[in-house]
Amino acid sequence: MASFLLSFISRSEDGSYVLEKAGYVVLGVAIFLLICAAAAIMSEKDKGDSRRAIRLTVSAISIALAFITSYIELFKLPWGGSVTLFSMFFVCFVGYLYGPSTGLTAAFAYGILQFLQSGGSYILSIPQVLFDYILAFAALGVAGFFYKSKKGLIIGYIVGCLARGVFASIAGYLYWMDYMPESFPKKLAFLYPVAYNYSYILIEMALTLVVLAIPSVRKAIKRIAFEATNKD
Image (cartoon, rainbow, N blue to C red):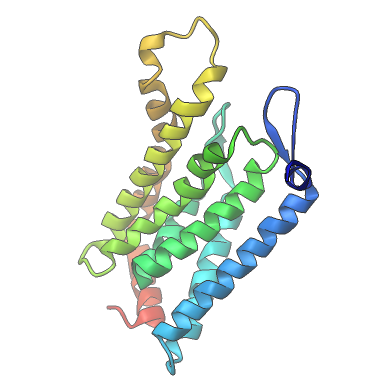
């Protein structure tokens, strides 16, 4: 069993784990199966309806835009985390359009992509990966619970961002505080991960909300939402 696991990950001298090539293959297959499962669920829900093709297409485009814009970093913090070009918005947008089921599925897939992008080369433990990447980004999908609200786009986006910060802060407290110097004040051990993670999350959230307040942007999003769901 141990030799089987070592074909996917290996342990470095500092106690972290490194994802091997076989591990990337397994994760790639997992993503493919996840997409197939999501497609099956959506197809059953919209059986006989052309809306399922629109739903899959729009979701895929949104996640692709989120992944691309996540590489465009306005600034990056030294211990991880960055303010990107509105990448979180595109993930939350899926939930706003199609509700929690599709939103959480898309956000979960995006979390795996984020792990492959930046987390696959440094793994402290499986729970750390879950809190830092999978659950943190999947939390953006909670925006879908507000998709029927009048201000669902804004409220859902804010809640999604705050939810992501919760998981990121938990990961910081449980796993990353051990790497702080001995001189670091113990009284700040609980507050520091919260302040650190929400610093870049809230900045990106605020910048996104400013852009969303622009009349032409609101009009464009309203048009896209109508074309994608007939939601006015």
